[in-house]
Amino acid sequence: MTGPAPGRPHGQEPATPPALPPRFPLLLAALLLTSAMSMLDQSIVATAGPRITADLGALELYSWTFTAYMLTFSVAMPVYGKLGDLFGRRAVYLSAVVIFLVGSAACGAADSMGWLIAFRALQGLGGGGLQVSAFSVLGDLMPPRQRAKYQGWFAGVMVLANLAGPVVGGVLTDRFGWPWIFYVNIPLGLIALAGLATLLPRPAPRADAARPRIDYAGTALLTGLIACLVLATDLAGRNGWDSTAVVALGAGALLLGAVWIRHEKSAAEPVVPLGLFADRTFTTCVLVAFTVSLAFFGCVNFVPLYFQMVTGASAARTGLLFLPAMIGMAAATVVAGQIIARTGRYKWFPVVSTALAAVAAGFMSLSAKDTDATAVTLLLAVMGIGVGLSSQVTTLVAQSTAPREHIGVSTSTVGLARNLGTAFGATVFGSILNARLAAEAESGAAPEVYGNALTTVFLAAVPVLLLGLVPALLMKDTRLEARGPGGPGGPGGPGGPGGPGGPGAKSAAGA
Image 1 (cartoon, helix red, strand yellow):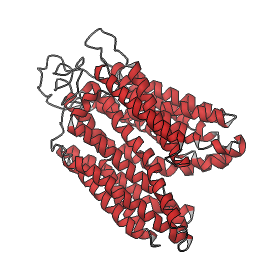
Image 2 (image 1 turned 90 degrees about the horizontal axis):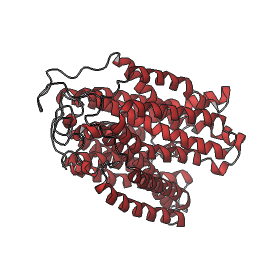
Image 3 (image 1 turned 45 degrees about the vertical axis):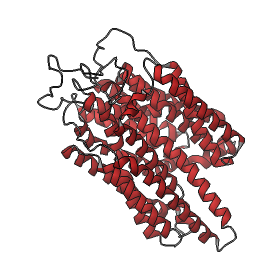
Image 4 (image 1 turned 180 degrees about the vertical axis):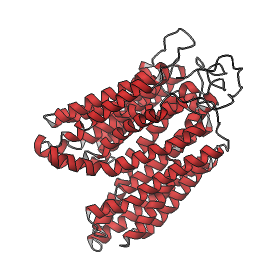
Protein backbone atom coordinates (compact mmCIF):
# COMPACT_ATOMS: atom_id res chain seq x y z
CA MET A 1 0.00 0.00 0.00
CA THR A 2 3.02 2.22 0.32
CA GLY A 3 6.06 2.19 -1.89
CA PRO A 4 9.74 2.69 -1.22
CA ALA A 5 10.86 6.22 -0.56
CA PRO A 6 12.08 7.82 -3.80
CA GLY A 7 15.83 7.84 -4.14
CA ARG A 8 16.59 5.89 -0.95
CA PRO A 9 19.41 3.38 -1.50
CA HIS A 10 18.59 -0.26 -1.03
CA GLY A 11 18.98 -1.45 2.57
CA GLN A 12 19.11 2.06 4.10
CA GLU A 13 16.51 2.55 6.84
CA PRO A 14 14.54 5.78 7.08
CA ALA A 15 15.57 8.11 9.88
CA THR A 16 12.12 7.87 11.44
CA PRO A 17 9.33 5.31 11.22
CA PRO A 18 7.08 5.81 8.18
CA ALA A 19 4.30 8.31 8.72
CA LEU A 20 0.86 6.87 9.37
CA PRO A 21 -2.00 8.04 7.16
CA PRO A 22 -3.94 11.13 8.22
CA ARG A 23 -6.58 10.57 10.91
CA PHE A 24 -5.13 7.17 11.76
CA PRO A 25 -7.10 6.89 15.04
CA LEU A 26 -10.32 7.02 13.01
CA LEU A 27 -8.99 4.39 10.63
CA LEU A 28 -8.02 2.20 13.57
CA ALA A 29 -11.55 2.56 14.94
CA ALA A 30 -12.96 1.36 11.60
CA LEU A 31 -10.58 -1.61 11.60
CA LEU A 32 -11.62 -2.53 15.13
CA LEU A 33 -15.30 -2.15 14.26
CA THR A 34 -15.11 -4.59 11.36
CA SER A 35 -13.17 -7.05 13.52
CA ALA A 36 -15.79 -6.72 16.26
CA MET A 37 -18.61 -7.44 13.79
CA SER A 38 -16.85 -10.54 12.53
CA MET A 39 -16.20 -11.90 16.03
CA LEU A 40 -19.59 -10.87 17.42
CA ASP A 41 -21.41 -12.77 14.74
CA GLN A 42 -19.85 -16.02 15.94
CA SER A 43 -21.31 -15.63 19.44
CA ILE A 44 -24.45 -13.53 19.07
CA VAL A 45 -26.51 -16.21 17.32
CA ALA A 46 -26.38 -18.84 20.09
CA THR A 47 -28.95 -17.26 22.44
CA ALA A 48 -31.44 -16.74 19.60
CA GLY A 49 -31.49 -20.44 18.69
CA PRO A 50 -34.81 -21.38 20.35
CA ARG A 51 -36.63 -18.44 18.77
CA ILE A 52 -35.15 -19.10 15.33
CA THR A 53 -36.13 -22.77 15.34
CA ALA A 54 -39.59 -21.90 16.65
CA ASP A 55 -40.15 -19.56 13.70
CA LEU A 56 -38.36 -21.47 10.93
CA GLY A 57 -38.59 -25.07 12.13
CA ALA A 58 -36.06 -27.69 10.99
CA LEU A 59 -34.39 -27.99 14.38
CA GLU A 60 -32.21 -30.79 13.02
CA LEU A 61 -30.60 -28.33 10.58
CA TYR A 62 -29.98 -25.52 13.06
CA SER A 63 -26.37 -26.49 13.83
CA TRP A 64 -25.57 -25.92 10.15
CA THR A 65 -26.08 -22.19 10.65
CA PHE A 66 -22.83 -22.28 12.63
CA THR A 67 -21.10 -24.81 10.38
CA ALA A 68 -21.90 -22.82 7.22
CA TYR A 69 -20.47 -19.64 8.71
CA MET A 70 -17.34 -21.40 9.99
CA LEU A 71 -16.80 -23.16 6.66
CA THR A 72 -16.94 -20.11 4.41
CA PHE A 73 -15.15 -17.96 7.01
CA SER A 74 -12.22 -20.39 6.91
CA VAL A 75 -12.25 -20.69 3.12
CA ALA A 76 -12.33 -16.91 2.69
CA MET A 77 -9.26 -16.19 4.81
CA PRO A 78 -6.48 -17.35 2.46
CA VAL A 79 -8.35 -16.05 -0.60
CA TYR A 80 -8.72 -12.52 0.80
CA GLY A 81 -5.14 -12.55 2.01
CA LYS A 82 -3.83 -13.33 -1.47
CA LEU A 83 -6.20 -10.99 -3.32
CA GLY A 84 -5.20 -8.15 -1.00
CA ASP A 85 -1.54 -8.80 -1.78
CA LEU A 86 -2.23 -8.80 -5.52
CA PHE A 87 -4.71 -5.96 -5.94
CA GLY A 88 -4.24 -3.81 -2.86
CA ARG A 89 -5.94 -4.00 0.50
CA ARG A 90 -8.49 -1.23 -0.04
CA ALA A 91 -10.73 -2.73 -2.73
CA VAL A 92 -10.57 -6.22 -1.24
CA TYR A 93 -11.36 -4.99 2.28
CA LEU A 94 -14.32 -2.91 1.11
CA SER A 95 -15.64 -5.89 -0.85
CA ALA A 96 -15.52 -8.04 2.28
CA VAL A 97 -17.53 -5.46 4.23
CA VAL A 98 -20.17 -5.26 1.49
CA ILE A 99 -20.49 -9.05 1.27
CA PHE A 100 -20.81 -9.29 5.05
CA LEU A 101 -23.53 -6.64 5.12
CA VAL A 102 -25.49 -8.22 2.25
CA GLY A 103 -25.26 -11.57 4.02
CA SER A 104 -26.44 -10.01 7.29
CA ALA A 105 -29.46 -8.39 5.65
CA ALA A 106 -30.32 -11.63 3.86
CA CYS A 107 -30.04 -13.65 7.11
CA GLY A 108 -32.48 -11.33 8.83
CA ALA A 109 -34.97 -11.71 5.96
CA ALA A 110 -34.63 -15.52 5.70
CA ASP A 111 -38.00 -17.31 5.82
CA SER A 112 -36.71 -20.88 6.09
CA MET A 113 -33.85 -22.69 7.76
CA GLY A 114 -32.40 -23.64 4.39
CA TRP A 115 -32.19 -20.01 3.29
CA LEU A 116 -30.76 -18.96 6.65
CA ILE A 117 -27.98 -21.54 6.29
CA ALA A 118 -27.24 -20.34 2.76
CA PHE A 119 -27.12 -16.70 3.83
CA ARG A 120 -24.94 -17.53 6.84
CA ALA A 121 -22.50 -19.04 4.35
CA LEU A 122 -22.56 -15.77 2.39
CA GLN A 123 -22.03 -13.82 5.59
CA GLY A 124 -19.03 -16.02 6.46
CA LEU A 125 -17.43 -15.21 3.11
CA GLY A 126 -17.35 -11.58 4.16
CA GLY A 127 -16.47 -12.28 7.80
CA GLY A 128 -13.27 -14.13 6.95
CA GLY A 129 -12.16 -11.20 4.83
CA LEU A 130 -12.78 -8.71 7.64
CA GLN A 131 -10.43 -10.47 10.03
CA VAL A 132 -7.59 -10.98 7.55
CA SER A 133 -7.82 -7.51 6.01
CA ALA A 134 -7.74 -5.67 9.33
CA PHE A 135 -4.47 -7.29 10.42
CA SER A 136 -3.01 -7.01 6.92
CA VAL A 137 -3.67 -3.26 6.87
CA LEU A 138 -1.70 -2.90 10.09
CA GLY A 139 1.10 -4.87 8.46
CA ASP A 140 1.05 -2.56 5.47
CA LEU A 141 1.04 0.70 7.39
CA MET A 142 3.53 0.33 10.22
CA PRO A 143 6.77 -1.40 11.23
CA PRO A 144 6.53 -4.57 13.32
CA ARG A 145 7.35 -3.03 16.69
CA GLN A 146 4.83 -0.24 16.28
CA ARG A 147 2.27 -2.77 15.05
CA ALA A 148 2.70 -4.81 18.23
CA LYS A 149 1.23 -1.99 20.32
CA TYR A 150 -2.01 -1.95 18.36
CA GLN A 151 -2.64 -5.66 18.01
CA GLY A 152 -3.53 -5.85 21.69
CA TRP A 153 -6.52 -3.65 20.93
CA PHE A 154 -7.87 -6.36 18.66
CA ALA A 155 -7.55 -8.88 21.49
CA GLY A 156 -9.63 -6.58 23.67
CA VAL A 157 -12.25 -6.38 20.94
CA MET A 158 -12.28 -10.18 20.70
CA VAL A 159 -12.89 -10.51 24.44
CA LEU A 160 -15.67 -7.90 24.42
CA ALA A 161 -17.33 -9.54 21.41
CA ASN A 162 -17.25 -12.98 23.00
CA LEU A 163 -18.62 -11.67 26.29
CA ALA A 164 -21.18 -9.29 24.83
CA GLY A 165 -22.43 -11.59 22.04
CA PRO A 166 -24.79 -13.79 24.07
CA VAL A 167 -26.08 -10.80 26.07
CA VAL A 168 -26.67 -8.61 23.03
CA GLY A 169 -28.23 -11.52 21.15
CA GLY A 170 -30.65 -12.20 23.99
CA VAL A 171 -31.69 -8.55 24.37
CA LEU A 172 -32.22 -8.01 20.64
CA THR A 173 -34.17 -11.25 20.30
CA ASP A 174 -36.45 -10.47 23.25
CA ARG A 175 -37.06 -6.83 22.36
CA PHE A 176 -37.14 -6.79 18.57
CA GLY A 177 -37.06 -10.38 17.30
CA TRP A 178 -34.24 -12.65 16.15
CA PRO A 179 -33.75 -10.98 12.70
CA TRP A 180 -32.21 -8.03 14.55
CA ILE A 181 -29.19 -10.05 15.64
CA PHE A 182 -28.28 -9.78 11.95
CA TYR A 183 -29.77 -6.37 11.14
CA VAL A 184 -27.67 -4.75 13.89
CA ASN A 185 -24.64 -5.28 11.66
CA ILE A 186 -25.99 -2.96 8.98
CA PRO A 187 -25.65 0.46 10.70
CA LEU A 188 -22.34 -0.59 12.25
CA GLY A 189 -21.07 -1.91 8.93
CA LEU A 190 -22.09 1.21 7.03
CA ILE A 191 -20.16 3.36 9.50
CA ALA A 192 -17.11 1.13 9.10
CA LEU A 193 -17.51 1.09 5.32
CA ALA A 194 -17.58 4.89 5.15
CA GLY A 195 -14.53 5.13 7.40
CA LEU A 196 -12.52 2.61 5.40
CA ALA A 197 -13.50 4.11 2.05
CA THR A 198 -12.45 7.57 3.24
CA LEU A 199 -9.35 6.78 5.28
CA LEU A 200 -7.68 3.71 3.74
CA PRO A 201 -4.74 4.76 1.57
CA ARG A 202 -5.00 3.84 -2.07
CA PRO A 203 -2.44 1.30 -3.27
CA ALA A 204 0.68 2.56 -4.97
CA PRO A 205 0.94 1.74 -8.69
CA ARG A 206 2.62 -1.59 -9.40
CA ALA A 207 6.24 -1.42 -10.48
CA ASP A 208 5.48 -3.57 -13.52
CA ALA A 209 2.65 -3.17 -15.97
CA ALA A 210 1.71 -6.86 -15.96
CA ARG A 211 -1.71 -7.75 -14.62
CA PRO A 212 -1.50 -9.95 -11.51
CA ARG A 213 -2.24 -13.61 -12.16
CA ILE A 214 -4.88 -15.26 -9.99
CA ASP A 215 -4.20 -18.85 -9.02
CA TYR A 216 -7.69 -20.16 -9.81
CA ALA A 217 -6.69 -23.82 -9.68
CA GLY A 218 -4.82 -23.42 -6.40
CA THR A 219 -7.71 -21.48 -4.89
CA ALA A 220 -10.22 -24.16 -5.93
CA LEU A 221 -8.05 -26.97 -4.56
CA LEU A 222 -7.43 -25.15 -1.27
CA THR A 223 -11.15 -24.38 -0.95
CA GLY A 224 -11.97 -28.06 -1.39
CA LEU A 225 -9.28 -29.05 1.11
CA ILE A 226 -10.52 -26.64 3.79
CA ALA A 227 -14.14 -27.65 3.15
CA CYS A 228 -13.27 -31.34 3.62
CA LEU A 229 -11.42 -30.62 6.86
CA VAL A 230 -14.14 -28.42 8.38
CA LEU A 231 -17.00 -30.71 7.34
CA ALA A 232 -15.13 -33.81 8.52
CA THR A 233 -14.57 -32.36 11.98
CA ASP A 234 -18.18 -31.19 12.17
CA LEU A 235 -19.63 -34.56 11.15
CA ALA A 236 -17.18 -36.45 13.38
CA GLY A 237 -18.58 -34.57 16.35
CA ARG A 238 -22.07 -35.82 15.48
CA ASN A 239 -21.56 -39.26 13.96
CA GLY A 240 -18.12 -40.36 15.15
CA TRP A 241 -14.73 -40.51 13.42
CA ASP A 242 -15.44 -43.90 11.84
CA SER A 243 -18.59 -42.84 9.99
CA THR A 244 -18.56 -43.30 6.21
CA ALA A 245 -18.93 -39.58 5.51
CA VAL A 246 -16.03 -38.62 7.78
CA VAL A 247 -13.72 -41.26 6.30
CA ALA A 248 -14.65 -40.13 2.77
CA LEU A 249 -14.03 -36.48 3.62
CA GLY A 250 -10.71 -37.37 5.26
CA ALA A 251 -9.60 -39.25 2.15
CA GLY A 252 -10.73 -36.33 0.01
CA ALA A 253 -8.70 -33.93 2.17
CA LEU A 254 -5.55 -36.05 1.76
CA LEU A 255 -5.99 -36.27 -2.00
CA LEU A 256 -6.76 -32.58 -2.44
CA GLY A 257 -3.87 -31.65 -0.15
CA ALA A 258 -1.37 -33.66 -2.18
CA VAL A 259 -2.62 -32.24 -5.49
CA TRP A 260 -2.68 -28.70 -4.08
CA ILE A 261 0.92 -28.87 -2.82
CA ARG A 262 2.10 -30.18 -6.17
CA HIS A 263 0.27 -27.42 -8.01
CA GLU A 264 1.50 -24.62 -5.71
CA LYS A 265 5.14 -25.56 -6.36
CA SER A 266 4.80 -24.55 -10.02
CA ALA A 267 2.12 -21.83 -9.89
CA ALA A 268 3.19 -18.35 -11.02
CA GLU A 269 1.27 -16.63 -8.19
CA PRO A 270 0.45 -19.40 -5.67
CA VAL A 271 -2.43 -18.64 -3.36
CA VAL A 272 -0.15 -19.70 -0.46
CA PRO A 273 3.53 -19.53 -1.48
CA LEU A 274 5.07 -22.69 -0.02
CA GLY A 275 8.41 -20.89 0.23
CA LEU A 276 7.04 -19.12 3.30
CA PHE A 277 7.37 -22.39 5.22
CA ALA A 278 11.08 -22.53 4.45
CA ASP A 279 11.47 -19.90 7.16
CA ARG A 280 11.56 -21.78 10.47
CA THR A 281 10.03 -18.87 12.37
CA PHE A 282 7.02 -18.66 10.05
CA THR A 283 6.38 -22.40 10.32
CA THR A 284 6.66 -22.18 14.10
CA CYS A 285 4.06 -19.42 14.21
CA VAL A 286 1.63 -21.56 12.22
CA LEU A 287 2.22 -24.61 14.44
CA VAL A 288 1.88 -22.65 17.68
CA ALA A 289 -1.31 -20.94 16.49
CA PHE A 290 -2.82 -24.32 15.59
CA THR A 291 -1.79 -26.25 18.71
CA VAL A 292 -2.68 -23.51 21.23
CA SER A 293 -6.12 -22.96 19.65
CA LEU A 294 -6.75 -26.72 19.46
CA ALA A 295 -5.88 -27.28 23.11
CA PHE A 296 -7.39 -24.15 24.66
CA PHE A 297 -10.68 -23.94 22.80
CA GLY A 298 -11.01 -27.72 22.74
CA CYS A 299 -10.90 -27.72 26.54
CA VAL A 300 -12.92 -24.63 27.39
CA ASN A 301 -15.86 -25.75 25.25
CA PHE A 302 -16.75 -28.24 27.97
CA VAL A 303 -16.01 -26.15 31.05
CA PRO A 304 -19.51 -24.52 31.13
CA LEU A 305 -21.04 -27.97 31.50
CA TYR A 306 -18.54 -28.70 34.26
CA PHE A 307 -19.49 -25.55 36.15
CA GLN A 308 -23.19 -26.29 35.85
CA MET A 309 -23.23 -30.09 36.27
CA VAL A 310 -20.42 -30.56 38.81
CA THR A 311 -20.39 -27.33 40.83
CA GLY A 312 -24.08 -26.45 40.36
CA ALA A 313 -23.39 -22.96 39.01
CA SER A 314 -26.16 -21.09 37.19
CA ALA A 315 -25.79 -20.01 33.57
CA ALA A 316 -25.20 -16.42 34.66
CA ARG A 317 -22.54 -17.43 37.20
CA THR A 318 -20.88 -19.62 34.58
CA GLY A 319 -20.35 -16.53 32.45
CA LEU A 320 -18.78 -14.71 35.39
CA LEU A 321 -16.49 -17.65 36.11
CA PHE A 322 -15.18 -17.39 32.54
CA LEU A 323 -14.47 -13.68 32.88
CA PRO A 324 -10.98 -14.01 34.47
CA ALA A 325 -9.81 -16.22 31.58
CA MET A 326 -10.97 -13.71 28.98
CA ILE A 327 -9.51 -10.75 30.86
CA GLY A 328 -6.24 -12.64 31.35
CA MET A 329 -6.05 -13.40 27.64
CA ALA A 330 -6.63 -9.77 26.66
CA ALA A 331 -4.23 -8.39 29.28
CA ALA A 332 -1.47 -10.82 28.29
CA THR A 333 -1.85 -9.83 24.64
CA VAL A 334 -1.57 -6.13 25.46
CA VAL A 335 1.44 -6.64 27.73
CA ALA A 336 3.20 -8.82 25.16
CA GLY A 337 2.61 -6.17 22.51
CA GLN A 338 4.00 -3.39 24.67
CA ILE A 339 7.14 -5.37 25.56
CA ILE A 340 7.78 -6.34 21.95
CA ALA A 341 7.26 -2.72 20.89
CA ARG A 342 10.01 -1.62 23.30
CA THR A 343 12.51 -4.45 22.89
CA GLY A 344 11.78 -6.05 19.54
CA ARG A 345 12.26 -9.49 21.14
CA TYR A 346 9.52 -12.06 20.64
CA LYS A 347 10.88 -15.62 20.88
CA TRP A 348 10.05 -16.28 24.52
CA PHE A 349 6.38 -15.31 24.24
CA PRO A 350 5.35 -18.43 22.27
CA VAL A 351 7.61 -20.50 24.57
CA VAL A 352 6.08 -19.17 27.77
CA SER A 353 2.62 -19.29 26.18
CA THR A 354 2.67 -23.00 25.40
CA ALA A 355 4.50 -23.95 28.61
CA LEU A 356 2.17 -21.95 30.86
CA ALA A 357 -0.94 -23.27 29.14
CA ALA A 358 0.39 -26.84 29.45
CA VAL A 359 1.03 -26.41 33.18
CA ALA A 360 -2.44 -24.95 33.69
CA ALA A 361 -4.06 -27.78 31.74
CA GLY A 362 -2.14 -30.32 33.83
CA PHE A 363 -3.33 -28.82 37.11
CA MET A 364 -6.88 -28.54 35.74
CA SER A 365 -6.83 -32.28 35.12
CA LEU A 366 -6.18 -32.73 38.85
CA SER A 367 -8.83 -30.21 39.95
CA ALA A 368 -11.73 -31.10 37.65
CA LYS A 369 -12.73 -34.19 39.65
CA ASP A 370 -13.39 -31.98 42.67
CA THR A 371 -16.17 -29.45 43.03
CA ASP A 372 -13.96 -26.41 43.59
CA ALA A 373 -15.09 -23.95 40.91
CA THR A 374 -12.68 -21.31 42.23
CA ALA A 375 -9.61 -23.45 41.53
CA VAL A 376 -10.74 -24.23 37.99
CA THR A 377 -11.54 -20.56 37.40
CA LEU A 378 -8.06 -19.48 38.50
CA LEU A 379 -6.43 -22.15 36.36
CA LEU A 380 -8.57 -21.04 33.42
CA ALA A 381 -7.24 -17.52 33.96
CA VAL A 382 -3.66 -18.84 33.92
CA MET A 383 -4.40 -20.76 30.74
CA GLY A 384 -5.97 -17.63 29.24
CA ILE A 385 -2.81 -15.66 30.04
CA GLY A 386 -0.76 -18.36 28.36
CA VAL A 387 -2.89 -18.22 25.23
CA GLY A 388 -2.84 -14.42 25.20
CA LEU A 389 0.95 -14.35 25.20
CA SER A 390 0.99 -15.89 21.72
CA SER A 391 -2.45 -15.18 20.23
CA GLN A 392 -1.46 -12.06 18.30
CA VAL A 393 2.32 -12.46 18.57
CA THR A 394 2.17 -15.35 16.09
CA THR A 395 0.46 -13.15 13.52
CA LEU A 396 2.87 -10.28 14.11
CA VAL A 397 5.99 -12.44 13.83
CA ALA A 398 4.70 -14.35 10.79
CA GLN A 399 4.14 -11.02 9.02
CA SER A 400 7.65 -9.90 9.86
CA THR A 401 9.23 -13.01 8.30
CA ALA A 402 7.41 -12.69 4.99
CA PRO A 403 8.29 -10.48 2.03
CA ARG A 404 6.12 -7.42 2.04
CA GLU A 405 4.14 -8.58 -0.98
CA HIS A 406 3.03 -11.60 1.09
CA ILE A 407 1.77 -9.71 4.17
CA GLY A 408 -1.82 -10.77 3.51
CA VAL A 409 -0.95 -14.40 2.82
CA SER A 410 1.18 -14.69 5.97
CA THR A 411 -1.65 -13.16 8.02
CA SER A 412 -4.33 -15.41 6.58
CA THR A 413 -2.22 -18.58 6.92
CA VAL A 414 -1.76 -18.08 10.67
CA GLY A 415 -5.43 -17.11 11.02
CA LEU A 416 -6.53 -20.21 9.15
CA ALA A 417 -4.32 -22.41 11.34
CA ARG A 418 -5.91 -20.85 14.42
CA ASN A 419 -9.41 -21.35 13.02
CA LEU A 420 -8.80 -24.99 12.07
CA GLY A 421 -7.26 -25.63 15.47
CA THR A 422 -10.44 -24.36 17.12
CA ALA A 423 -12.61 -26.57 14.92
CA PHE A 424 -10.47 -29.67 15.42
CA GLY A 425 -10.19 -29.06 19.15
CA ALA A 426 -13.92 -29.07 19.76
CA THR A 427 -14.34 -32.37 17.93
CA VAL A 428 -11.21 -34.18 19.09
CA PHE A 429 -11.66 -33.34 22.76
CA GLY A 430 -15.39 -33.96 22.48
CA SER A 431 -14.62 -37.48 21.30
CA ILE A 432 -12.23 -37.98 24.23
CA LEU A 433 -14.88 -36.74 26.66
CA ASN A 434 -17.60 -38.99 25.25
CA ALA A 435 -15.34 -42.04 25.34
CA ARG A 436 -14.47 -41.42 29.00
CA LEU A 437 -18.12 -40.78 29.89
CA ALA A 438 -19.10 -44.09 28.34
CA ALA A 439 -16.37 -45.88 30.28
CA GLU A 440 -17.46 -44.36 33.60
CA ALA A 441 -21.21 -44.46 33.05
CA GLU A 442 -21.71 -47.10 35.74
CA SER A 443 -19.66 -45.50 38.50
CA GLY A 444 -20.75 -42.87 41.02
CA ALA A 445 -23.23 -40.04 40.72
CA ALA A 446 -23.62 -38.25 37.40
CA PRO A 447 -21.74 -35.08 38.41
CA GLU A 448 -18.75 -37.04 39.58
CA VAL A 449 -18.75 -38.98 36.31
CA TYR A 450 -18.57 -35.77 34.30
CA GLY A 451 -15.83 -34.33 36.51
CA ASN A 452 -13.76 -37.49 36.17
CA ALA A 453 -14.26 -37.53 32.40
CA LEU A 454 -13.19 -33.91 32.10
CA THR A 455 -9.87 -34.66 33.79
CA THR A 456 -8.99 -36.78 30.74
CA VAL A 457 -9.83 -33.89 28.42
CA PHE A 458 -7.51 -31.49 30.24
CA LEU A 459 -4.80 -34.12 30.50
CA ALA A 460 -5.00 -34.76 26.75
CA ALA A 461 -4.35 -31.05 26.14
CA VAL A 462 -0.93 -31.24 27.81
CA PRO A 463 0.92 -33.25 25.11
CA VAL A 464 -0.71 -31.09 22.41
CA LEU A 465 0.68 -27.95 24.02
CA LEU A 466 4.07 -29.57 24.59
CA LEU A 467 4.08 -30.41 20.89
CA GLY A 468 3.76 -26.68 20.19
CA LEU A 469 6.48 -25.92 22.73
CA VAL A 470 9.15 -27.85 20.79
CA PRO A 471 9.18 -25.64 17.65
CA ALA A 472 8.77 -22.55 19.83
CA LEU A 473 12.03 -23.41 21.61
CA LEU A 474 13.73 -23.82 18.23
CA MET A 475 12.55 -20.42 16.99
CA LYS A 476 15.29 -17.93 16.08
CA ASP A 477 15.95 -15.36 18.79
CA THR A 478 16.04 -12.30 16.56
CA ARG A 479 14.82 -8.75 16.96
CA LEU A 480 11.92 -7.18 15.10
CA GLU A 481 12.70 -4.15 12.98
CA ALA A 482 11.85 -0.77 14.46
CA ARG A 483 11.40 0.78 11.03
CA GLY A 484 10.19 -0.28 7.63
CA PRO A 485 6.66 -1.75 7.39
CA GLY A 486 6.58 -5.47 6.87
CA GLY A 487 9.91 -6.22 8.56
CA PRO A 488 12.24 -7.86 6.03
CA GLY A 489 9.62 -7.25 3.42
CA GLY A 490 9.55 -3.51 4.09
CA PRO A 491 10.50 -0.89 1.53
CA GLY A 492 14.01 -1.46 0.34
CA GLY A 493 14.53 -4.38 2.70
CA PRO A 494 15.27 -7.95 1.71
CA GLY A 495 12.22 -9.25 -0.05
CA GLY A 496 10.63 -5.81 -0.28
CA PRO A 497 10.08 -3.61 -3.33
CA GLY A 498 13.46 -2.78 -4.75
CA GLY A 499 15.17 -5.47 -2.69
CA PRO A 500 16.13 -9.06 -3.43
CA GLY A 501 13.09 -11.29 -3.64
CA GLY A 502 10.74 -8.33 -4.15
CA PRO A 503 7.64 -8.32 -6.37
CA GLY A 504 8.03 -10.92 -9.04
CA ALA A 505 10.19 -13.19 -6.92
CA LYS A 506 8.75 -16.67 -6.54
CA SER A 507 10.12 -17.62 -3.13
CA ALA A 508 9.57 -16.17 0.29
CA ALA A 509 12.12 -15.13 2.84
CA GLY A 510 14.34 -17.95 3.73
CA ALA A 511 13.39 -20.02 0.66
